[in-house]
Image (cartoon, rainbow, N blue to C red):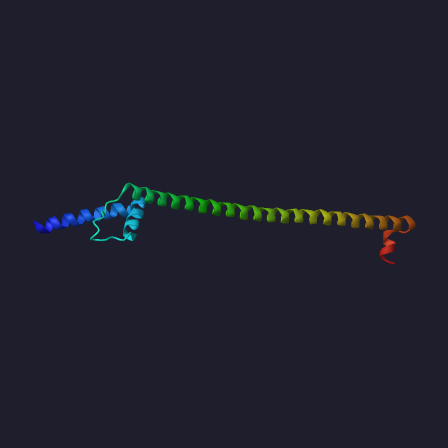
Length: 136
């Protein structure tokens, strides 16, 4: 049956095209062949040579290497940003702790001054009771 043969040939062509598209190196080689000027009169073969396969493989490999380098650079930047934010957070925590210590020291000093003033007052007013001070 002619239509069955045509369908089989079309399926075979589509399968071959899919094989080329799913393989990165074959796809690159296909693109290289499309870019190369073809002359119908020159008699040049459209078959892929070993050099073309190697060129396609090198192109695919260098693309992979560039992608790997790009991802490594992104990771490095991400790591540096994380370190920066961690340092900022640590500085903020350190500043907060330092402020709390200074405040506690100031409160202690103020309490010591109050205690000293009370002590001086009671030292000079030994005969005065607190009730006398409240109603004075």
